[in-house]
Structure formats: structure tokens, C-alpha cells
Image (cartoon, rainbow over all chains, first blue to last red; front, side, top):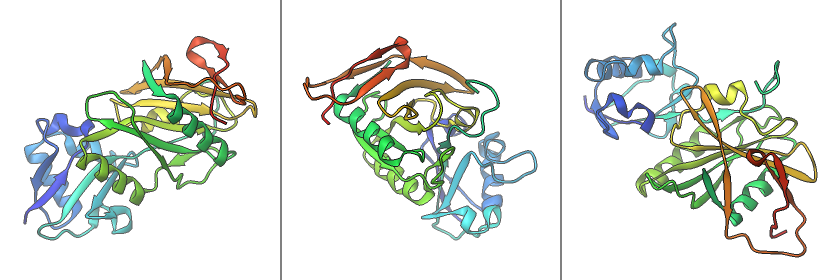
Length: 100
Length: 161
């Protein structure tokens, strides 16, 4: 099944500079495995060592954040559009050292 | 160096003041590759926190699509620190995922002086850069004093109050 994957600037080094690449898979996890066969390394940028979706990225299926769709188990259908964005977050946090 | 229109800087600082003591956040978009911060887009802090900010995923996707459709990118990503200095925290650095963006930090910890500093954050390395404000109009009733950290000295900056 054909799924369009929109890729942010920071990951375009894996896609030869392309903004969008085709992929396939029944779930987001399958899709990332499929992408990694043609764009080696991209999967490791999106997943933690434990294989969970990294908190530093947002992945959307069409208009929905996959965190609300079952994460990596989120189901995909032919014609879906998947968008990957770097999460924008931060803040002063609990600082333990000056300037940290 | 970050070049920022005075009206946009005013809007960013006003947003940070309005949301204080929670952190405020947003984007200034510009044409891809231009390094020109043109379109001010305040964002919701989905965390609504005094120590953390996070773009709302739905709003972020909508805004990003608008930018992408108009060949824009986030030239500036700003947020406020409300009790500490305008310097990227460890959390800020770990999340920084737009290597071409200027990360603008605004500190609202002092009620009368707003500290404004800009950084590049690439692969975990933080580099401070000067901020140049353009199109500032002179206003004898200026009420806001800005501190641009890179200069290490206070600058009385005239703003439309």
C-alpha cells in the first residue's frame, strides 16, 4: 500500500533532500521498517534504544498525532499521509547547575 | 546574527509577559533559506507550565502545513523562561530539532527589564549570536527596557507600549 511520508529538514539527509518519500506498511512500525530499507538510519533517529517512539519527534497519521492512535501500532491505510516533525518543547525545567 | 523587526520583537515580549508566570512559545516564519523572520505566529504552550513548554501537536501540524505550503520555515523559535535567565536549558538543547532556526529566549523574571538572547542549537552545541533590531520607532513614552544578553549591557529599547 502506498503511503506518503513528509520528512522534516533535519531528516532529509536520509532522503536525498526529498521533502516527501513513499512508503508502505500496515502500521507505523512497519512503515518505519520499510523506510529504513531505502533510507538507512532514519528509523534509528525516530526510535529509542528500547524501540519506542522518541519523545523528540512528533509523528502524525493524516491529522492525528500517533500518540493518540496507539503509537507505533497505529494502523495505516492506502493513501494515508504520514508527517514527521521534530517536537518543539523545552523550558527552564528543574535546573541543577547554573546555565544547565 | 538574528535580525528581527521591532514590531515582531514587541509582539514576542508582549506574549511572554501576558503568559507569565507560565512559559510562552511561538514561531516567526520566513521564506525557506532566506533567514528572514517575517511572519509572527504565537503558539499555545500545551504544557501550561512555569518550567516547560511544548507546542500543541495539532496546532503545530496545522501551522507547519501552512508554512510548508507557502515555502516557509521556522526562522525563529521563541520561548520564555519566567524565573531564570534567557539561556537554553538542558531540556531546550535536547529537544532542539530545527538546526536552521534561531532559538530566541526571553526572560521575564524581572518585571521591568526583559532579557532577550538568541542562539543556534545544532547537534547539542549552543552558540549565542547577536540580535539586531530593525525598524524601531522612537517613542518618548517607551516603557519597556530590553537587555540583549550578547552585548552584556542593558539597552533601552523604544517600544510601542
